[in-house]
Length: 254
Image 1 (cartoon, rainbow, N blue to C red):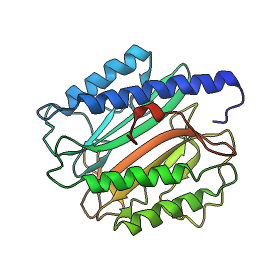
Image 2: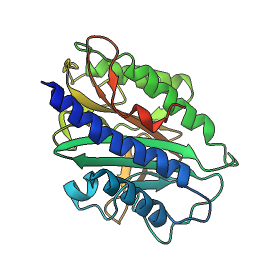
Image 3: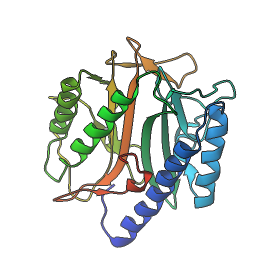
């Protein structure tokens, strides 16, 4: 969406507060021994307290309120009573929701407890690359150039990017124009970021895979060559200068 007045900006800020606070609190609540279903239900309660509704459930009928992916699961992991969190797990939580007609989206990969499986370096790379990408976005910048920046930064650190997962426009629905904000230079994408538009910028930084494939459950995605992936995501408003980071209170950069 494009922000045209103060009321729309306020609406986006409220929806973004709901998803950002939910993501932060879920991250803080996660413990070894807990199931991903318990973690999801905790997030659902927070969203409900804000008056917000789960975006993947509303949009796609997703079998959970948030997406929780663990270890070799890249994204769209289904909360389950059988998936028990363990010390050192690489966890990704993606929270998106609708509130009063406004939609916002954010995500965070983190290591649970002690980094016994050595995932922290990958997590830090994803966070740092997202930060650099977002602060290079303003009206007029080519979307492909931001993709090029993300892939270049990943390669510098010895990582790859997932080519079929992208950021996207957001605001009046979960996925809007621009539909694809890729993590690589898509030479066919000639579109530019427009001032006042709302976009969800996401990194998909991986150890060995370059594509994500869907498992038989119809939702969970894993790498085509295995390995691990870290994702971090903010919803922002594009300006002529520094972007407005609507989901900043999720504290994924802290």
